[in-house]
Amino acid sequence: MTWVIRVVTPKKPARFVLVKPECKVYYNGRYYDPTEITVKKGDTIVVIAVVENVGDEGGTCELAILANGRPVRTDRFYIAGHKKARRTFSLKINESVNIDIAVKKAGEREWSDTYG
Image (cartoon, rainbow, N blue to C red; front, side, top):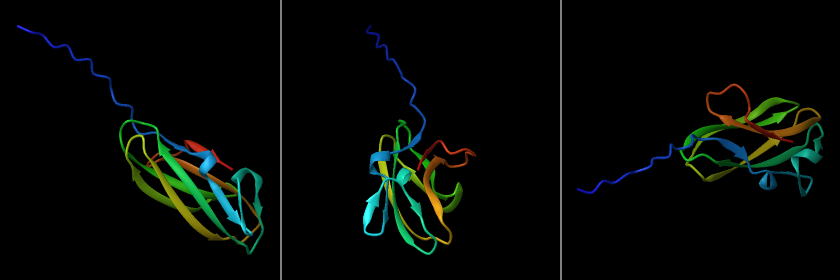
């Protein structure tokens, strides 16, 4: 008789992080890092956000563009384990704001990662 011993490593649950070098804000003809920009009232911006699931299991995340800490645009989507997803948002700004990009696991209260 031959015995086979199998070691099972538990899968890591989905965990979402922003791929910060790939997150950009397009404003006035050039790309900016979200940490270096304040947008003026009446201007239009394009926000590019890249999210990575660093867990083994897939899951649904919620991505938000924050203006002065308040969500102004959100999107929910599924990302398989160890994969990235890119989302692009176009926004017309109604007041002078600081822009942040935030992500969390769908259903959670707190943002797990923010950038801006």
